[in-house]
Length: 233
Figure 1 (cartoon, rainbow, N blue to C red):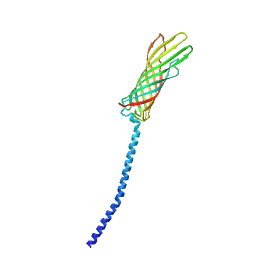
Figure 2: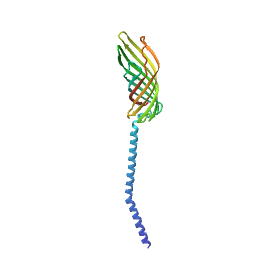
Figure 3: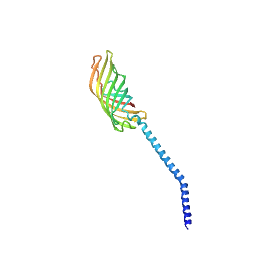
């Protein structure tokens, strides 16, 4: 009887060992598939995050930026300059944080000639400004950001007036207060920006090369579009 029980026990152990050997490869294969699936998901997630950060990487850790712009200027209160003036500019930013910056700009507006009766007037402008820029939506590293800015500007009017009798060359300057809004867009390798700015004349300095009463540099509007390149040092 004992031999019979011992024989039955040996059969059970043998069956269990066989079952374990039979199911172990399948279990290992299942674990391998799950592990590979997890590794693939992790790799895809890492690539997705890297791709989403690729464009913003240029702006991260960068305290400085530089760029250029095309700008227009519409003057007010002027009998001669009643059209949009076209100019080119260079810009520089010092980022105080991701949400604000100090921006400087230098612009030159091409000469243009206007005629009124027997008076011919040719003018060009040189403009410098210094602004504080604050993001109101997004930031300096996001794909899209909207900001407001304000500060001071300095503008010089190179003026040549010709009549049938005389030619007057003069230079007029003004200090302005500037307020404006803008938006920037991430292009991966740089940022594109557009701005609208209003300037109100505060102080006038007349520096004529010939004696004349001349004209004041009036208040004006600026519209700009350009590119901004973060700089890493």
